[in-house]
Length: 511
Image (cartoon, rainbow, N blue to C red; front, top):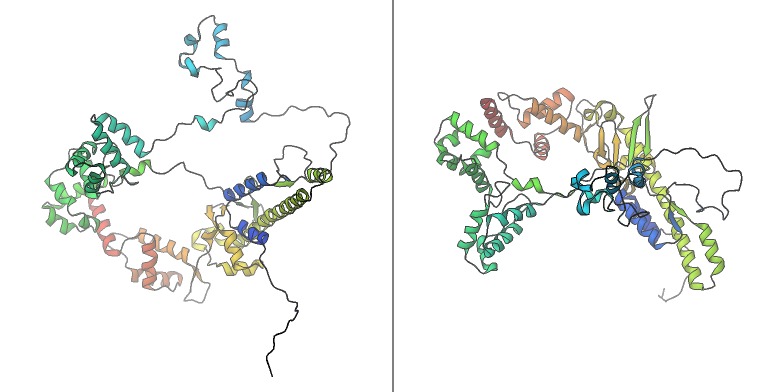
């Protein structure tokens, strides 16, 4: 049979990811902050979209007519909110000039702190607009004092410590070379080469500014950081110097080795170790980070009167959009340009898709959260020891969705329960088998039990990893190997049994 080229027409069905479908999938994994930013961008781009604020009747999604005319309803007094009472109605407050005129005296005699540009009624305070009457009220957050950074805090001190301009330049360079903990991460030789000076000159400046607050900054390692703090307290003596030279023995709680290296008895060593524990090995951490942002839950879980769990989406963080069909119909009737009509049709299609996608996203989040609550009912009632093992596949099969969809829904989402605020990913843990043939145990519950056993051990009876594994199998029927216990223990930053024995003995002797 010969091979010849030919043309054929076939019909087939295939799943194609359109741009809108890909965008809908992406919306599932966005946090509420990212989702609101995305909706705000769409509001700027699409003239048919409006944000629903619930302030009153809106023509969006409705007809062209307004409310029917009729007898006016009697006005009922409305309760003022805290913001309206203090900001929007600030004109009811008398100005400083009016109050002073009432007492027939000067303003500075009544309000000495409100003289000059900050005087009350000057239009620059948080209660009045900058433009006077009728202007937009200023944001109260603008009047909150900012917290100085470590760099700003040290720069203010360097200006008082150093007088030579060249030394101030070197000190400014050293400040910029500090990490978040306050340690100097740049070699002095490199600093000298970049600034065109000698390493001795740089080190001399470094010694002058090492006494800045917080004490311990500008150190090059942990030993120097602790030494600076001990010198400030006048407690740096030869014994302390030898103790700092053996910090690896301090970390290992090797009391016998420390006594030989330092040359002191146990009582003096315990006192010196207590002094070390009072020092701060990371002095710059007090100035780290920006403003703390609170985690806002996406779903609330509350227990109803009958014992059932009630779920509710956090409506305050969900963006709500409306489609202004009245505006669309009005503009469509007036335009004759095909390009403008095509643009309006595209805007209407995008607006319909966005409204549908937001609703579908909310329903999907609620459905996944409801299944998580159903499977983790024991955790909500009795605590972490009753946390069940749960996988993405298990939840996906229960609600009839794909595993990847559940993974996207649970990303960057938080759920508020009677036991606290948790990320949805927290409830997905692997399973450990049961030797008694019962239900499997959650890995998170096993880690919690390991921590409980270690915290309850006495200095004379430290539990090894083998002993912990045997205890878990004997008490709860959990089949877990010694290496698994060691892996969980290290993940929780719990030291080995040898180091724990030394730590607890040292603490017992210090008491």
